[in-house]
Length: 93
Image (tube, rainbow, N blue to C red):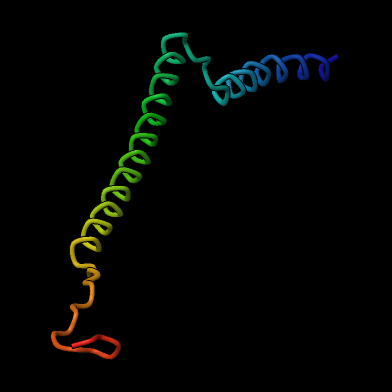
């Protein structure tokens, strides 16, 4: 009988402690406002990543355009040969 009373006392003391320890390890649920804020933050991060990629593409495009313009500016131009003055072979001078 004493054993049963001792088990009842120990279990009545240990169960609430175990339940409170379990409750402390559980994370609280996120509120709808918090979920909405998280979604907005994710969208902002995605938009920033897309904007960064678009800026990289624009920068590379501008660099290529500048290289093409520079190549055109300094490219050797075709100059037709000038005819020699005087009589050449096959000309009747």
